[in-house]
Length: 372
Image (cartoon, rainbow, N blue to C red):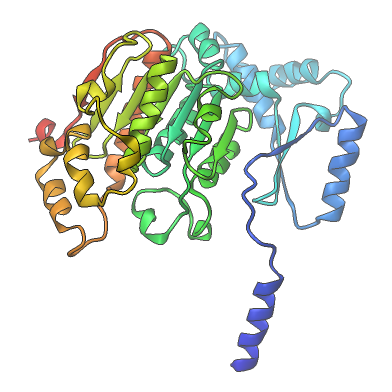
């Protein structure tokens, strides 16, 4: 047994260290240099798995382009031949390499990909609305509840760019609410979310801020490459919770927050109400942000209480807060609440971006009050 353990130790030492790479690479084989680069990659790394189901995607594309008819197999073949033309099937679309997963996937290129990915959104989201949402940028601070929100936003394709900020890494205790595998323990929460988004839709632009949202990077987070259209704030730090709103208000960017209890969603429309007080006036106007950094959790509680509506929380959440430091180490979060938050915030963001919802306020989707 000791000898086998030494073998295992040596094998572990030889493994490549985990990187924070979350950006896929694209290869379009009609370009000679990209064809050469992909073939070199595959020959140098024979363990890379190849997934080539381009024909099924093209048949789906033909199907959605002919909604009034049930095409015969022969007609599918005719349409397919017309689409491919004199190209080889391998030259159609783009090959996407995911280095963290050792996979190469052959897909249709961006315009056709988006058409397929959003085809079953229509007409709950109209075609012109889908195009409008492609231009939008959403920033998310905090990737526990925020991770569910980011993935739901990506699935529904509510924006074309996501900026994700979180300094924390995945722990086993997070997996009661964060959908990921145990192989991702000690990987950045932001990177885990970004990779899942890239595997779902490699054409959504994602930028991660692995130090979290800080005073030093907030300018870039909000404005780098163009201003955010919506901020989703899900962080635990009271100073960043306030500072991000100060920045959002100055830039007239709406803020959406889910509190993961009683389905509460908070909305501040600084885009429509630039003079609106931060968090509906629950943040004291004379609050010194510098002093917040030195406060204990107990000292922060009177400030934090109205900000997240602690007095209106569920009975079990109130009890849980009283047990922090006694029987538990932090406040609980449930997967059902996190998934609900992903749905509620995504819907709210979409309607804000499409100018279908214009209000500020606090709203509850409280299952204990609905299902009685």
